[in-house]
Image (tube, rainbow, N blue to C red; front, side):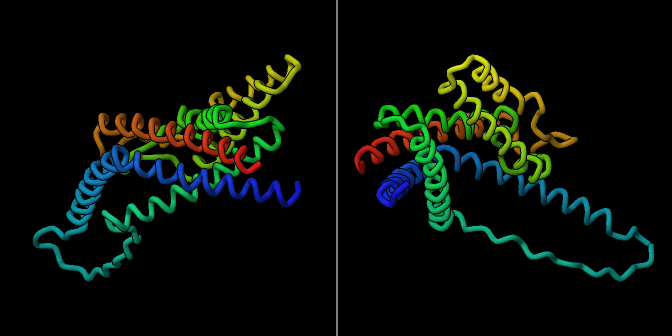
Length: 242
């Protein structure tokens, strides 16, 4: 791969990623962020209730001798304030994520050796949506704040395995010529879901079920628009800088 191709990929990824990341932020502000803010209210209320119950359990009974207790106050984790600061960090995070995923798309396009336009780029975007959102969400659907979940490392390992096998399975299904390889591709699509995603021993959420379902639908729509936009722009800019 020569320097001209690297520049072409870099220019494509930066422009497509910036545009797609900004669009994603706009869509999130219209629907996803509102649901998250509502869920955080339930999460904070549940945390406050649990704190009160723990405090009541630790309080000495009437007439019992008082004991000296050392109270350790753990520092709260920093988080951006609601409003402009939170939106600004969201924009930066979404653009960074879009550039990262754009690199995957551009690399796949280069490896395939196929000519790409904005129309074929849309198909690459749909493939990215299936690989990085739909397939993992079948086992680990998007969760609102306050939802009980399995350990993070276990969820991350399953997500990476699922995305990798789904990408390989789709690649074999589309590009492989021998039926045995296509059959292997189908198997790769199924294996992660046969293994199963990690889940907590006890399921529960501070937010009501209706809010959790609304979050899943809103996130699916936002990610769908994001991936189609990223794919189309990647195809457009990649051809433009040829």
